[in-house]
Image (tube, rainbow, N blue to C red; front, side, top):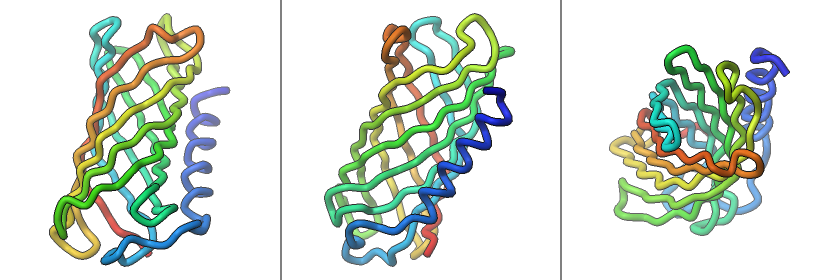
Length: 172
């Protein structure tokens, strides 16, 4: 699958998720709808000590009030002649810290496609995240999301630390 097809499949997955309906209801005080996050991202490969930089885009929806949220995210990273794209499905447990701050702890599968270099190919893995969300305004906020990922199957020795931070938009 070429990079354009991979990107198209990833965008289609996010749009399909965004057009679905919720199983549960929204948390008290939320206006409903989706939360969209966009911002810069980085990833540090713990095996070969390389760092990649890029951008992250995700859509999040509450599935079970105060218990389960699902985030579908896309990440595009570049470093020293290497390009990669990933998509993840993170299941999160929300914790309310205050009226304007939330913490979410999550885990889920990720698929990464490396387009260049000796590790070229598609790999499966698991990503663990802490997602800090701050809402100074009703529909606009910001987030910080550190992550840890590890590979499965033939790439089970892959380990990475990463993260993203940026803008949050509540969309009805």
